[in-house]
Image (cartoon, rainbow, N blue to C red; front, side, top):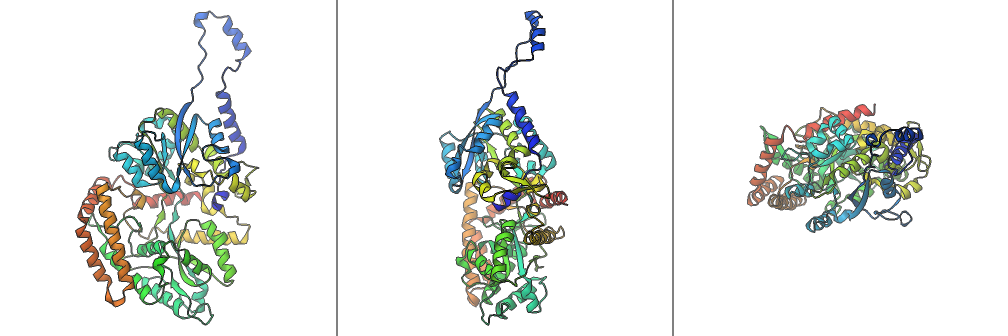
Length: 568
């Protein structure tokens, strides 16, 4: 949320006002014509007098909107508030918004489709759900309405990865997506003041990482005379980061796949390597022994902020918020704390970078039964225009924001912006914020404030480390761009994942009684029992047919390269 308040538009209010004024005059009915023109027309024969042009008829459309329970009573509700009114007053169509609970969106949408009352435009992040709608022939391809969406046509040209990600097996485009800033999904932060105190160097290999973590756990780096510090943290999210260090893809809902001799195979060797590493962390007391109950990493975060973790695995989810709040809390609790980003160390499997928060995110599909596709396209085009989308994201200049020294919006009153603007972001869910440098993390900081300048400098260092093209990306592609399983294959995947999870936890916590090697053998047996070969056959068929046209790991580097040029 705080990050939104710093992001924004570079277009002036004058230009926006001109746009709105133009829309208003074009939509007036019965306005008097120019008097001279009327007189001239009156002197012509009636047969040659052209009929007055009929005003363009506004279409009626319906659009889903995530209900996050964030609209203050003073603002109305998700169906009607200052921003829905602005959209309907200035946009090309009459829009009815249909809220769906964010926590239960796919269930609600399934009911709406089953009853034949699903809205025209479906905004939904759930990739498998959108895939199921395609399989059920519930979606309309957008190819025929692209002429009414010049904004998206420009994006498809500038970022052909959007077309890759939105095209289905029949060769038509069904999904609309957005370009986001590429940011690290997970990263390592290390207490450099502890390194200095214990006379240790930055770890560059996994063996060195274990050595440093052991020193952090055993050698009283905080100087309180107690053995109460951890070398690292491990939970659901941080476990994914450890998997990535060994080249294993990090998705918690998909199995780890690898490419060998042009074929897709289970990454058994990488799974064994990461499992053995995690077991050593546990056996040697380098992590919290109760890590299994810290599924969301909340306890680990508190331990880090209280100065008890030396190597912190961070699930990013807001770098600006971390610098302005979490890092400030750490410095308050431990005034001498110093933190720096740590590149993933080289492992026996290679040198990898962390997963990237999906920069090409598909968000939107169109109901096959939409009655007015042209109005749908016109509405989407209107909302994709930066001057319109960024108005909703940031509010009004002079009221909610002013230009900072870098030309980007800076909140005037954060509380007011949160109340009047903060709930509205999902109306622009398909807007490509990644094409405007003012929305980038670096431009969210005010370099005139020392704490923010430090955050900016640290994020530049993070980009240097985690966007290094020499490092290999873990996995075949981003989780959101993996093929969608059919119901029967998804059942197999879910069954195997549960078996794998139980087996691997047992291996981590059972000491010498249960080795990582035995865990892999048992996991392979569970794979065979659940017909895992069917998943492998599916993945190889998908890869052979789509390796040159699907969004793959190599596309991530292209996006990063484009965006890094924007912030220079």
